[in-house]
Length: 207
Image 1 (cartoon, helix red, strand yellow):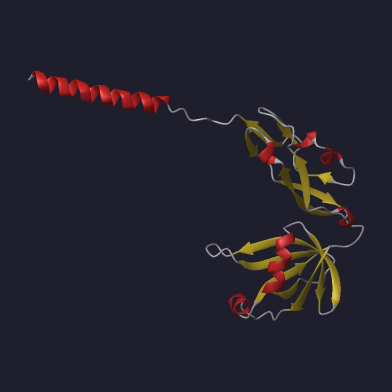
Image 2 (cartoon, rainbow, N blue to C red):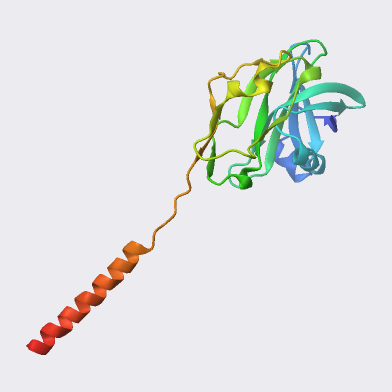
């Protein structure tokens, strides 16, 4: 589990100025907190954290030396630049189930002789903080054209420690045949053009 260091943030501080100073504004919320806590995190630390974590990741958030187990609930990006603008964290307590989401990663896609279409990439669920997960690997090795799967086909969907909130009949992936472009129509068109040119030349000679 990752650790992220943060500092208390002045409620009057402007987000744009914070980002200019090398910090990302953030907030920590949770029903066990008296009120939401405004914080700021060094941009370099945020960039490093997001390389290996995503929405739904569990972490230790250290604010002023005090550690709080939390869940990354939201990441806001600038619409054009794509840079991180704001983070949202949810404080979690051991033994209390929390709602989160994990990502489905399709492994060995390159080994499939067909077009793989991923139809579901995120699964919403509820679990104890100790059982939270970030990613589930689905291995496609050995899969063939016309194979497909729904959420209930996988063991993780029936894990008693996870309360799956996404419908179990949701399609996860499908595999369709590759489309191969034929060169014959172009060749026929070319031969047709040649024939047309020859006919035109013949008409000219006759006239």
